[in-house]
Image 1: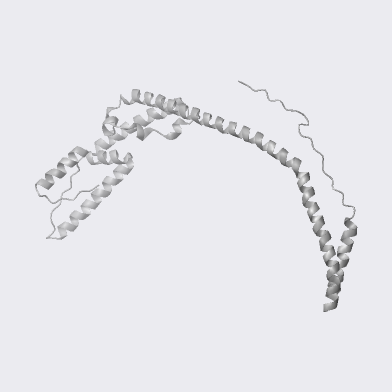
Image 2 (image 1 turned 120 degrees about the vertical axis):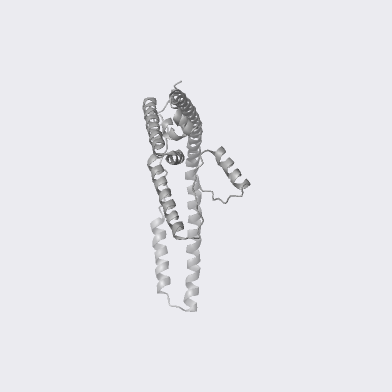
Length: 254
């Protein structure tokens, strides 16, 4: 629906107000004369008393002029105040309409983002079914792949699907590499989701264990230690229960 808005030429009409003050120069000259006289007046009780009456008349005149100025200003601005209120009313009406439209646009954007998310998840479900190893390592692996910017209008579905395919192949390759290196590497990779970081973590832990072993070898009173990696929450809880039941001294790491 397209609304036809009518705009008129000369839709605002006004006249510049003029206020004539023909006595200004005379009053100004008198005020300056009084001011100059007071500045040159000798400081005596009689001289101050004489000029005080004249100054009072001048002050009475300026007070009357100031009241006239205020009254004239109110009268001049009365038409403007009405015009200002009318323009503000129109702006408020259009502004409220703009707010309502923005709400509808935001609602539409949110609906489109939800629809796009559903479409991405549908493609994901079809593709991930061919990657059992990834699903076994991370049951909720979609969250590892998904990026919020995928829901932007500028991000095409074709590009998203291409990145999805690359992510699955790269991840499967990393899993195979980690499996080939050993269970501890696979476990670290499952935690970090970063093969390089997983390798660094394992190497750092092994170096630390080797250093502890050397320290224990140097200390004849040191108790022998062994490190085991238990994978899976269920097995971790079972192992911890068995250790406690058999009064085995152990230390749980992260």
